[in-house]
Structures are given as C-alpha cells and as structure tokens.
Length: 258
Image 1 (spheres, one colour):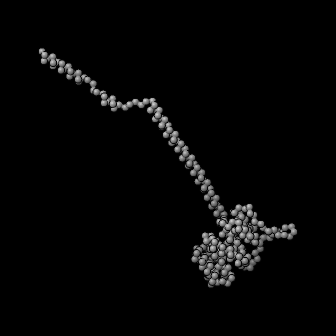
Image 2: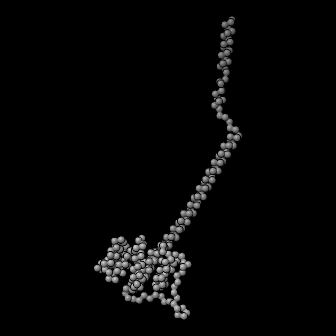
Image 3: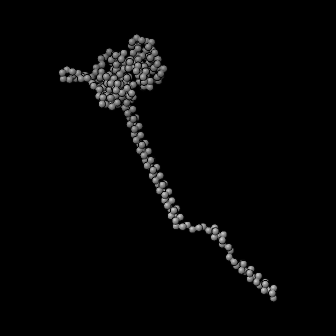
C-alpha cells in the first residue's frame, strides 16, 4: 500500500513539471526598450537643424554659382569689346600705312604732296593746332591718326604725334607714334629727324610690331645718303630677324639691287 502512494505522488509531480511555462527572463532582457517623448523630440530637433543647414548650404552654393555666371558674362563682354578695339586699331594702322605709302610714292616720283588748305583767321593769321590735353590716351592717339587718314593734314600730324609721345611716354601706342612720326618726316625729306624716330623704335621697343619696318626705313635712309654698307647692314638685319615678314621681302628686293 505504501509503495502505491509513493508512485502516485511521483507521477503527479512529473505532470506538474511538464505543464510549467518556459522561463521568460532572457526574452525580457532582449526585448527593445520603448522611447520616451523627450528622446523623440530631441531626434526631430536634430533632424530639423540638419535640414536647415543643408538648405542654407545649397542656397549659398546657388548664389555663388549665379555670381560666377554674372562675372563670366562680364568678362566675356570685356573680351569681345577688347577684340573689337584691337580689330579697329589694326584696321586704322593698315589704312594709315597705305596712306603714308601713297604719300611716299608721290614724294619719290617728284609729285607735290599738298596738305589740306588752312583758312586764315581775321587779320591774316593762320591758326595753329593746339593739342587738346583733356583728351584721353586713346582719343589723343586717334586724333593724331585722323589728321593723316581723314583730314590729310600731314604737317599738323607731326606735332600731334610729338605731343602724344611727350604726354604718354609709357603708352602702348608710343612705339607706333615714333614710327608714324618718322614716316611723316621721311616723306617730307627730313631724313635726320626721321632717322632718329626710327632708331628710337629699333632700340627702345624691341617687341614693337613696327620694328621691322623701322629697320627697313633706316636701310633706305642709309641708301639715300650713299651709305651702301650701312644700308646693306640694315637690310640684312631685317631678313635675319624678320624672315617671314613683308619688310623682309622688301629688304631682299633692296639687297638684290646690288
């Protein structure tokens, strides 16, 4: 009887152990913790600050881009304006060279070169051209050029170029002014003064576009003076230093004359 009671008790205890729920301590420890309201607000505030900073950076970059576009447009306009001015200057130089060449040809052929007549003022006095010192550098140079190209007042152009050289000794037009002064003097037959002007271009402006022509003119002045050796020296310098230029071609023709 006693053994039967013990067996029944053991069976009852086993049934209870099998029906007991599994432990939940580990699962509870691994479960995510819920966020408090303060944490959520903090995260939202931080995201808002990041978005605001990004928007401000994008706006700043757009403003910089617009500013750069405007500056590029301005620079492009300046470049186009300067290109136009250079083209105009080259065209004026070409016209002036043609005009002075025509005068030189007339001088060589013995034809008189008549400057434009000047009307005397009351009392029989002839007005003297007075340089306008209020002109800008470019305007002053253009005025001197116009005396040759448009008005054909060659005698008045000589003091105009001299005045320009005196007023603007460091100008980009100064070398050309010396050359045109020498050319005008050469056409008048004032060889000594013309030689000085051409020598100034050769010695003081080694990068001038008129240096080759100035060397050529110095050779022609030497040839006219009977200095054959000096003329040959100048012509050879033109050919050696400016072999592909028009001045070099003219120098070769002079050398071929013997």
